[in-house]
Length: 170
Image (cartoon, rainbow, N blue to C red):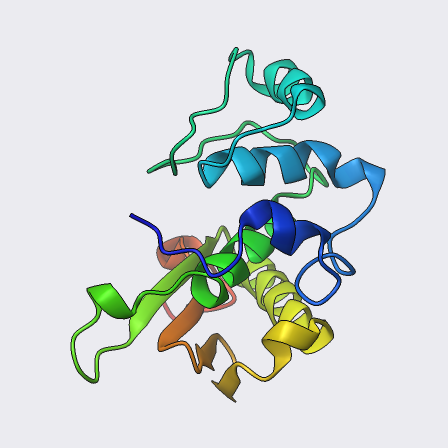
């Protein structure tokens, strides 16, 4: 069970969380999908949009274990998954699941090093621009943000064996 510090709906609309970094009509479908994926009930208008993009009559009403989408280039995948990653790491209380001194990990995988760099830029930008999140970053490396919540966001290339930039000698 997720112990939400703030609902996804509220975080998406609140300028202190994601309201300023994830706005605009082009992201309306993504906002609905993120709200539904976290198990939150949709409004009737949101449910119509949900049905239009999923062909499902209703949202799941509980957090989903997996989210699959067929989305083309420039469809908002990386930006939306950066918001979801930031939410899971910063807006969910994971202390009940972690042992003393243990840190949680929220991975965000990308198809290439270039896309992983873009995803890291999005995630870093979210934390920099959001007043309620900016103070949570304790340390940052080239691919990891360590948060005061006890969670590390790790952004990695999910296909390391085929990434010529990362493995030129293989």
